[in-house]
Image (cartoon, rainbow, N blue to C red):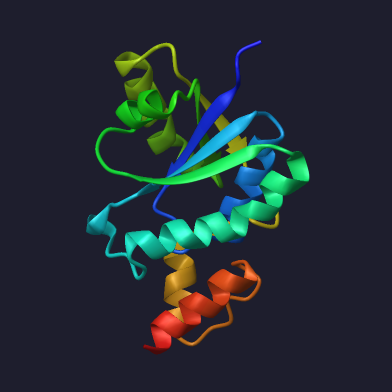
Length: 166
């Protein structure tokens, strides 16, 4: 049986408990998961690319160990479908939080299918405790002095607060 390889793309600025939740769910379905960290400077990231990759690696290592599978974290730029082919992914994993995510994700899945119909897009719902979390909201709350401890893993919390305090 061929290895089941999935790709979970995002900017992960910062990586949230919602991301970790989706990664854990995907880990149960796959033999290997590649977490693609997009450069995406247009979103104005608070972390440089290298640090985002490092944080995702640190925060996902326990999941890989728990499920006895491989989670690779790689930076990427360019077309998502091209990166999926490059890493040998047969599946693109996308997390859905709310109905508002669906329209955009549906369009992206259709475009990716048109570009390469051999790569499936799979949507995983975040658990009810993580459905409202987004990196953008986490950054805003932290920058305005709010408590983000329940939204991000411990190491990410420490690094985010250090970055915001400057």
